[in-house]
Image (cartoon, rainbow, N blue to C red; front, side, top):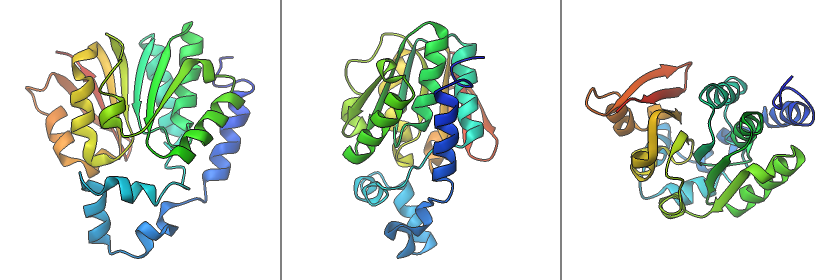
Length: 221
């Protein structure tokens, strides 16, 4: 048994995944009233993301069960102690990471979320899982919150916020990624600039797509 598969985290995650299963952003005003082309533009915009994601504040935008398990496995496998996350949402990925940190003997997850109501929900979920002591949630625009006071050495970076900002967030953290660190980007297809960078032979990463919606990169340089 481990923290992820035992009480209270296992039951909490099962309940949250079930509750969120039918909560699709497709029913939000931000999606329903615009064309597919405009949705693509908004998802890739570096200027309209705050308003766009603000309209999705009531939706979990969570990683899948499979991706959550991957996050736990990677964090355990590399004995992660310092993890940074862009895009807390309701705290699903944070629960997986914090469970791994608990089983690794301790550490810290620094995660950033600009929507106050989501910060509150995430804090409630982490408290219910008994993992809040391992997580620091920074409220505000990640371009500012993740620009200061990061650990000297970071084991894992998860990118799961505004897709257009993946290159900018990586640039903030990159100098602190230790050799062998993992970078996981959810829905990275919405950030072709990011994919072109991490897949370049000169970038210092080995990078492959994982499942249908995740880019998994290993820092080698």
